[in-house]
Image 1 (cartoon, rainbow, N blue to C red):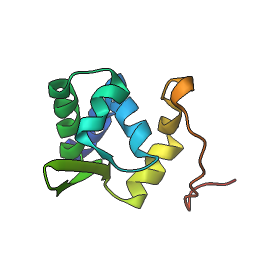
Image 2 (tube, rainbow, N blue to C red; image 1 turned 120 degrees about the vertical axis):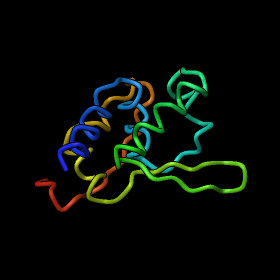
Image 3 (cartoon, helix red, strand yellow; image 1 turned 60 degrees about the vertical axis):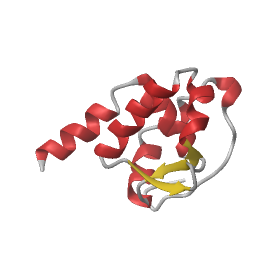
Length: 106
């Protein structure tokens, strides 16, 4: 059990992975979209996505030749929101939206 928690928190310890998560808190994305969003090459992005999947943070679904990534479940989504991860993107990339979690007090 502690191993899964260690993986989870280690996965959050990287700027690129946090940026990926900040976008996924808005909606699902194809793996191919993250190169332009993170300014990283596809190989690097794939490695980061793998870490996030193995940590139990993301899930993916194949749609033809594309792989679509999303946050694993609503509980994980709310946890990431409560940690302030959606605010990580550069200010020019922020899109304003609201998503209410049962843990939100606002």
